[in-house]
Image 1 (cartoon, helix red, strand yellow):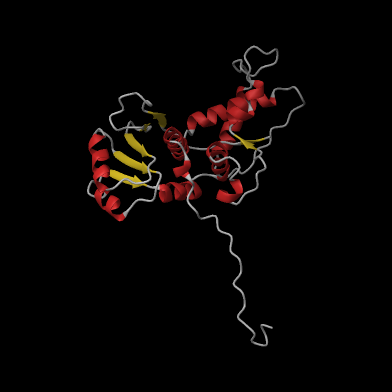
Image 2 (image 1 turned 90 degrees about the horizontal axis):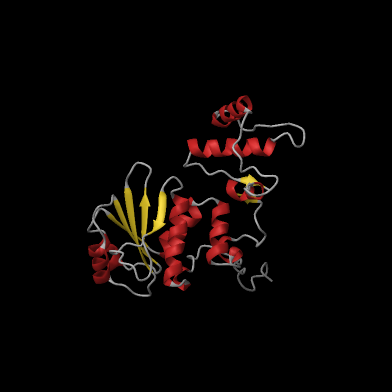
Length: 249
């Protein structure tokens, strides 16, 4: 029928995962925790914590980030349906003025008037729901994207990320070694490692070599491979706090 000219070809159905994350559906306290989680992953070498909670005097501050170089960043979280330039101005005035960067985090889409108001101060930025969603999709590794969705938007992996609901095999080192780190167990890796200095140094050198793409550690069962690996991973994280280390089950 198309060849005979009986109507135009139907447009293909397009599935998109570009919608912003539904942060406006979170409770105000959970929106703060969402922002805390996101900032922790974006800046793994920094100390990130909530600046008090409901009932505390917060001085217009919700999340504080202390950088490794001693700098500080301050974040104010606003889970709101409407705000306006006057409230933006009030939020800026309430925040202490001792940080390198101050950011207003909003659960809604910022209006042009709100953007213009925040732009008058160079030390301030405004991240709305579109900005937050873009940072998640562009700056977070896939495993962290999945964990964030599982924590704050359970059951929405496919809707938000286009991924099935199956669990990922990748874990953080503390999760991977948790079964071996019980201090009161008869078998535990919680004890301090003695010996294996030569193997430990060889593994550290291999991990720091940019030309080395894979390292094999081979030994009979029960020889202490897991305990040595745990120590080498901890040493690497101490030397490279801004690197993300993951283990596979």
